[in-house]
Image (cartoon, rainbow, N blue to C red):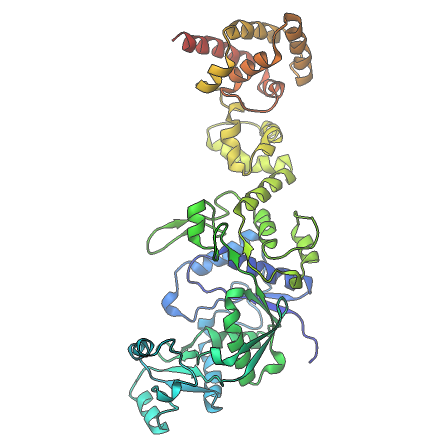
Length: 510
């Protein structure tokens, strides 16, 4: 077969928010396409009209926009293989249903849901297949006249794919090698429903992959049971020569315990499992999103890229360009990847450090303004340069460093008991006098003069600086004291010292 241009797809169903596991699958498809100078397609698989959720498709598109994962064609983009919503391809699928029926590779079944349930209760591990289709109500047990009459009478039916037992189905998997599945374990799956004149996922998926010239199907491990059926459908439709290669990615596992990652785990441990916040249109329940919880999209991408893939080096921080260059689908793990959400937080912290002070200040500035503070960007940037290494998220900056902009209105009781000594008012008064005489209020000059004064007076450095910090900050936290006082300036520093001397003394006496 002539070498074909790499084409991969991500086909979400609009049944709710996009799970973070789906984001990882899309990311691996994207990296694979870019690395191979291929194309990446977004297809919406909405053939199950009963599960359609309003707003889900827009959510999916917005999530990828935020993450920076770009598609070459598909829903919202267009392209030569459209339409890209399966519900808009209804007429196209019917011809392939008819082809399978006329070739004897599929048959019509009239069994009602109640009849099927009765069989499941009657026969343990009941499966609609070669062993049971002979006593069910279908076109294999009915005459052609009876079948046509039932259809003419408006009887609801499904079309089932006829699986031949006793065959070895080979799947060429780029991660797991040659996977062999016995056809006996596959039931005669429904591939079309007369109730809505739409195919099921299985047939629509195969038809679309073929017509959209998909060369590689990179999907989650949970879809591995579906792949043998898709191989059989490719063969039954005469498309064996254009069958894509498969890659079944490892599951994302719970941070603790056994089983795959679920929304419940996120709710229990306090981390998002969706890229964006999602409000359920029926219940109004709000589910957390990485964007709204202040994660950088680059950090989420970097975090997800290493959940199931290992570059074989010690490198952990990757730009998207580096990921495209180094990604190797064959190096993906065969076993599940534990979802270490704490590592995701670490990545966000590392990206805060990696970004310039000016960029972080640009994100922090609206928070400062939102708290009623009007400060020049230059001063906000100075605060960021002193404090950004202490936070994991930009939103954490305000509670940590609001004292730069707002003087303390009260003093932390525990810190007062520990740091405000009997002679602190006297010492802080002396310090105020020393600072008031300085014309040069730079960090360097303050440090030189104050340390010389402390040594001359025989004071303990820790006692003086801890009381100084409490006076200016209100609690025992923050960067170097002279960094703080230099930022505040002489006037504000002296004002805060005076207030602390007056206020804390009164509190101590009370």
